[in-house]
Length: 536
Ligand SMILES: [Zn+2]
Image (cartoon, rainbow, N blue to C red; front, side):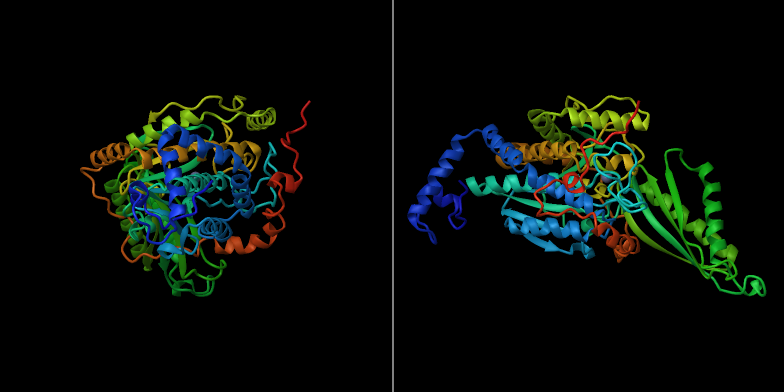
């Protein structure tokens, strides 16, 4: 039975002292309940959370399926954000919307006092990744439309589930502590956490738990990936008739072309470890009008802050050179910046123990058929699905990035990989959209949420854990002072992807998940599970 009283303090309960606002008989009920809780072991309390999450599976599946069906790109996660904030608010969380200048970003808070535990997860989709869930070959819902070609739709279901399970226990046993839920808005653009960090939204947290799907169930610690600066250079010139008076024009597109050439010549003399890539975001209107404006957008990636800054500086010099050669001017706009991420070893050990306590989901024959059929389709090893959790490991720095990186230098941080994905898929590819809104994906969500709920309970109920986590964090950051790679005064580029969503929203509406249907998304779509190719 959940305790309804919030006005009766723990101290009053323990001492049996005077109640200010509640009738004494109700306090007695609470005293009995707290006595029951204290007699219960930590493991039994975790069991309660695990059972709650098993029973709550339909709601977690609903969250994942709905966000999948919305197919929202970075900064345009309006429906997903509304779904989550409405749900958390209904459950008693205090919700602050539109934080750090981003309409789809929010902070949802429950509980009081310390420790303060953050939960965070990426939420956005990707362009051109539309895919029917549960179908083991390329079959878009809408050709060319955005989709969840990585499976971020499952992530928020994990953190929301864990937050709601722990909230139940805070209520039932009057636990001291605060839960804060954050979305990873526009993670595919490395887009939001740098701005949230600058706005101080992570101040005062004792730990941050971040969830991301993968094909395994495990965690790691240490330096894990690259940081980056995402920056667009825009050149300004002069229009003219391309045939009759080109000498009157100054081409901004020429400047973009020369910058591209200049950077590619510079590559030979850069560290082989660096990664830099670009797209031309604007190149002019039509060939017979000399373009007076043209833009090129770079990601400059490296393994540490100083090297990222150095790459960015080199980019600026080459841009200035290109402007000089073409008699144009150049301005830059930083869209995002992040440090590489560093996982806290002690926090990872606590999470790992909970992962092992929860164990792998029980895969059905249908789950395994889907996995093997997709692996066959992709021409990778037909290994099916893992049956054991992955042992804890120290990470190695690899060439990818996440904007969670900044958070890891401000707060002790751990990242969970939960098993809603099929081994052998490629991220940012239709194959990663096959499993995240299926029974297979739903099972991964539940075990992920259980591992997080167990970890939060460890942190709330065993203060010594947090001391060790904090000591590890002090050690990791003793020679480091985090400074944002995003220049002061930069506004989040929340207009990105608005045009693409405007085009596809009306088409996607037809495939939107009906929250009231009582069905899963594949049931609503009438997709047999699994749907595999008919092969001889
Ligand atoms: Zn991701």
